[in-house]
Amino acid sequence: MYKKLFIPGPTHVVDEILEAMSVPMIGHRDKLYSDLHGQVVTKLKKFLQTDGHIYLSTSSSTGMMEGAIRNCVNNKVLMTDCGAFSKRWAEIATLNGKEIDLIKVEMGQATTPEMVDEYLSKGGFEAVCITHNETSTGVMNPIKEIGALVKEKYPDILVLVDAVSSMAGTDIKVDEWGLDVVLAGTQKAFALPPGLCVVTVSEKAYQRSLSVGNRGFYFNFEQLEKKAVKNQTPATPAISIINALNVQMDRIYKEGVETRFQRHLDMAERVQSWTRKNFALYSDENYLSPTVTNVHNTREIDVVNLNAELAKRGAMLSNGYGDLKGKCFRIAHMGDLQIADVHWLTDQIDDILGL
Ligand SMILES: *Cc1c(COP(=O)(O)O)cnc(C)c1O
Image 1 (cartoon, protein in one colour):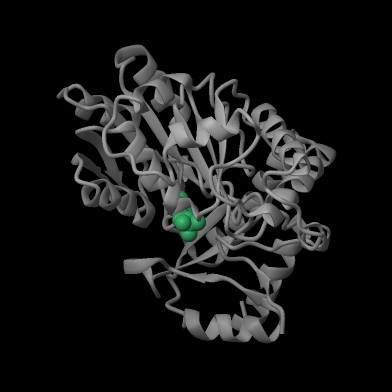
Image 2: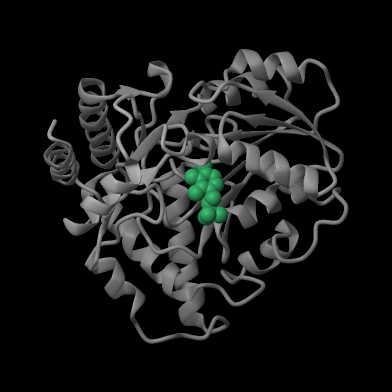
């Protein structure tokens, strides 16, 4: 039986998008493809408020997390560890032979501009990597403020952002906030199937990449740019998902960008108040995510069992990530889920648990 996904990726995909995936195939060197690619990039530039480069990477987001490091860092980069995904990015940097320094914060806490300032002031960094929305803890880190700090005090340092579970669910003003690379996969708040990653690259980051060694081929900005000017990609792209993204951008504008972001906040507030009433919020109240809530399992319910019961009713949520398994569970409220969906879900949980 199909289960409606309240997990933080992949998220629920509406029928109109599934239909946009099942159209006849076109050649990726055909003008039809270039037209499609050009339309998508134009819409994304407007949506993300950037005049920089935009590349469409046929990979999951992790591919471009690696790409961002390989393009932008020769030697040393400042990484964070505020949960599983920021930790993964730090590991990627290390495995690519980069020297890192690590801002480690307690799970459920945010990475602040003050912390970034303290570390960057030590000197020697080429870039700082920030996870916008730490999906494992339900914390949204203040990238606007971090971007402003770096722009003012460390103008040579690039700001690289993993916006995988926030982009399309909350506003990101790429240029105004001084963000050099911002990446996100399509299976989270864009509410498309997995397989494609969108990345913005500032001219500064692009120029920097040209002086970095061993960038490889697949995620190399220079290779991507050579084809992007022709509205193409170096290798065969996930054409079906790009077509779905084109349709989804129109749906986003039809709903209204502000309305979409407000819908995410409304869903988040509903889940947060339900959580406060019945459990507890795991994360710092000042940095709660608009797209995913990490519920502290204070009643010590059996999360696996809860999900098994929900499955019978056609829904699925997520267990706590990594060390938080069993101690927390996560409810995603992103993409094309509606406020009525989260009401329905919390009603089902109340019924199952007798709350
Ligand atoms: C899901 C997620 C990732 C990993 O994305 P993949 O598409 O599975 O590679 C990275 N960072 C964050 C914040 C995520 O939520």
